Image (tube, rainbow, N blue to C red; front, side, top):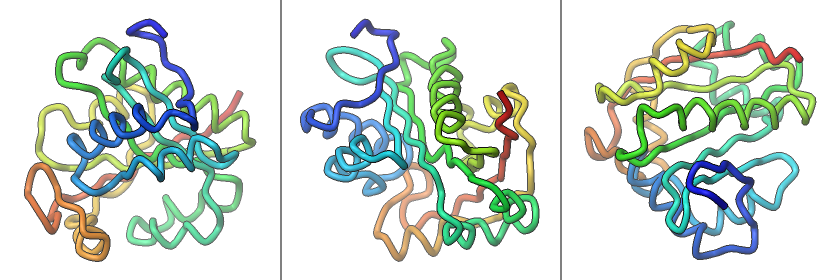
Amino acid sequence: MGSDDITPFDPGDPATAAAVAGLLNGEMGDGLYRPEWLLEDADSWSAGVWVTGSPAPDGAAVARVLAPADADYYRAFGRPALDLFAGRVGSFEAFAVAPARRRHGLGGRLVAVAMDWMRERGCTAAVTLSWRSGRSDSSLGLFRRLGMTEGPTVQRFYYEESVRNGWTCPVCGGPCTCGATLFTLALTR
């Protein structure tokens, strides 16, 4: 794998799983991802994990096909989120790019690979949240540039989840008091 190739994560590679978990947790919140979860996701039809960079990953993404019961997670965003669940919905759950590799199109390429994967699984819409950490490198600008529909922002969206699941925010610490903005995209061919 070349340094810019984006490939599906190998479910039999625990060393890379640990490195990918480290990248995701370092950028998004300590405790959000465990290597064993990434290995399970990579081996599942309903989840996808992609990685770029060699020998150490400098970009990673996680997406999944949501079940109707997952709509409750998005309830705070109201109809713009809940109406998506009339069809099959894909979630662009997470992505991280190492600081030295940012602003070179890698994040957009990770999103594109995940969206294509969702289309292959019959998803008619994608949902994602932009973490409103206040950092200049947040996903907000990328999602706007990609033409996603911006929905409502919910303040302190991650607070209860961070308390319940014990993860800490790399910006505000734990529990997380950051907000989240809903983004959606119709997945047409």
